[in-house]
Length: 74
Picture 1 (tube, rainbow, N blue to C red):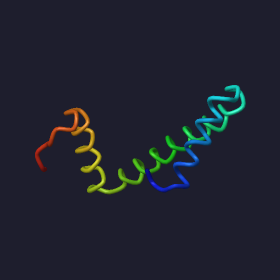
Picture 2 (cartoon, helix red, strand yellow):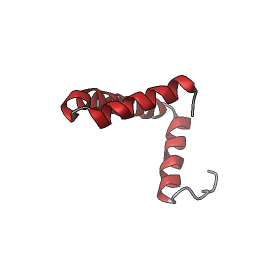
Picture 3 (cartoon, rainbow, N blue to C red):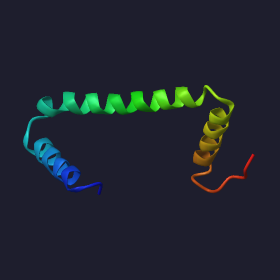
Picture 4 (tube, rainbow, N blue to C red):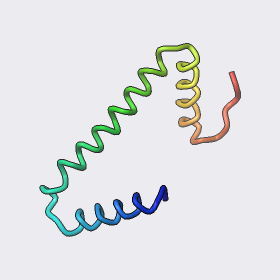
């Protein structure tokens, strides 16, 4: 776990989700998930701007296709 504050936040969030109606916490959760996708998209877009980044993305895709097994270097 990152730190005590993070662990406490997770505990509070779990309690909120467990004890409150979905309509109350779901919009905040959706906003968080959408932000994670946006961060990922920006990272990918920035990586695609350079040859090195494109090669790294290609290797990552291959690594995922191989379920994490080591793939040969370029």
